[in-house]
Length: 229
Image 1 (cartoon, rainbow, N blue to C red):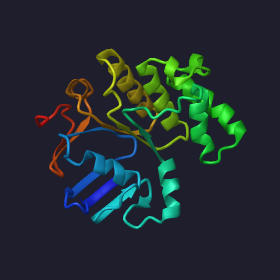
Image 2 (spheres, rainbow, N blue to C red; image 1 turned 120 degrees about the vertical axis):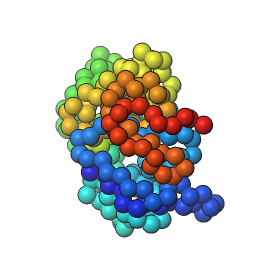
Image 3 (cartoon, rainbow, N blue to C red; image 1 turned 90 degrees about the vertical axis):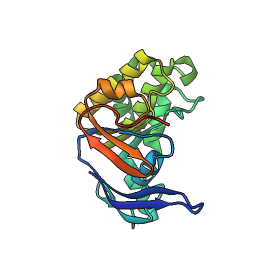
């Protein structure tokens, strides 16, 4: 579970990114996080992944308390949270298989486990026939599927998708969102950060709306309650 209680975050430059928010995302939930640029979305992601600590309040993520987490515990927290980025962040010199296997090697997985797990995850995202290709031989949608496979391979309980369809056309965007829905159906918590109103409206999920560091709307109505600035 992800839980924020009266969380504030201020930066040394004087920016007050979060202004006392309360937020709870249950295990197995699917939610959208939306809001205009500068509303605090990126700060929430960095708090969840342990990149930042709150200025005040408490943040609990999958059993870890982020306001007092020890440095040596952060890698263990991050194994429970997979992140999918808009720019993919793939290793161009490695094949599809090697990109996913690398994510397991960095946490010390055994080769036998890698050989079993990687093909399963590639099949799950529909890339089982592309394992020997390199990222530059894939379409944009396939590259995003590869990024999702990499986030999935260590079996995290939570996946954060940060603008996962921002570089894709509408058809590929729908495919990626449908894939995230399938992953959610298997029990993984999904938090999607997006500006794409059409996708939010199409998938009737919880929508958490941020504006100027505050949660201004939180519900299951499946559409925005703000105009992007």
